[in-house]
Length: 199
Image (cartoon, rainbow, N blue to C red; front, side):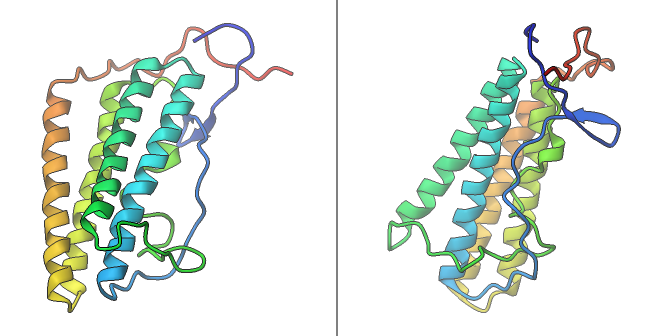
């Protein structure tokens, strides 16, 4: 960590965390309504995931954690590529029109593939970043599987199952990536030069 003006990360569960802007809460239940709804949800999930990873990368840069920042940027690029592919495969080729106030998701909050800001720690290592990504991919896989089971549109069901399988492949890829990534030591959170708040 560089010397000079520093900031103290926030606290979550006794651990120091870096605050990342939240996109706001959206309550009520998701209701699969057809092809337009499916595209809007699939595209929004990928875009929000890309934006959150990019925010994580910026936060890691602020704390001179360059290795993890670059990993989050790579994850952001992957998610944005997925969003672009969805539009390319759609008939309109344009971003879907979202309802006023945004989409509604089961349980409220953001889409299931968006990492929670509280997961971030300024001294986290690549292993931690991959664990966050793995959890997000698993949630996305469950979302599309459940979406397929609730829609009456056969084409939407087929597309949702294809997305679920794609997310399952992402899970396998990240699991393989984790096997090749050294786990952190038990004292990874300790900082000999901790950040502080200065006027």
